[in-house]
Length: 335
Image 1 (cartoon, rainbow, N blue to C red):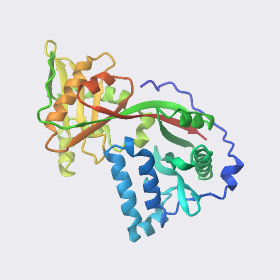
Image 2: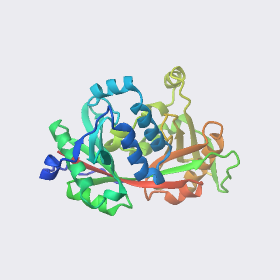
Image 3: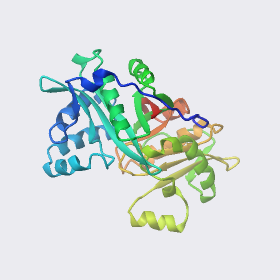
Image 4: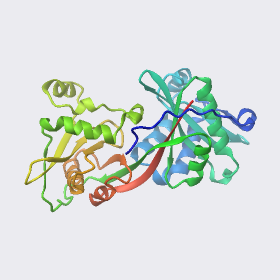
């Protein structure tokens, strides 16, 4: 993932009159739209949804039936990181288009993620996605948001072209992987040895993690590197909050030099595995670590997942029995 050295991008957006005046566009109503939006998202993205995405849709449906939640959410839409803001396209009382706005905090500044840009198959190629995205950008501008992000599937060239024309620049490509846990997962025949993470390797592990999970995307990360730090105080903290972190290290049998490490952080999200590896490391080290995780974690979860820069060690991850779910291009515009 090569992102260091990017210049700050300044964009001047010209929002089309259609986005301003179109009668079919209206703000998302927390009080009545969540179930219909959940159905639309599921229709458009079900074939590539991971477990986290499925939970997202289920939570949206559940929230749509909880009156007390809806009353709170209607007041809190601009101050939480829940997907409570956005715009829909409605025709004849039916929601056929959606663009969500998800607020995050990064260094005490608000960041917006434009997400779930979805259009019903029967209404595509009519400019609906563009109008909804333009309206979402205008909303961010009105709220004085400086940084807007979105992600788009790598195999959706039409959407990539649209977002590029709207002023978004690619910042990263990341692939989501998933595999079933299996106590009988094979052991790789190699000179790589898997051990528990050695505290002396922490600084190297941190450097590698910082490259693979960079600060540029830290606003989206709901975990901290500090949870992996060695030492009694951190162990006590994790014990008190009942978080059972697991860590492994891959070393060469002849040199005992670390080739890669792998952490499992049960944070409630799908991407619970976080590999750390150098560009010069043996790919077998990553394969061996992931196979070990599949064996060791079979009593915790039926499946495990990770997100990783695309292109880097793809074969090594696939060799460990992981299936690629999707590759997302992360794009950013700075107002």
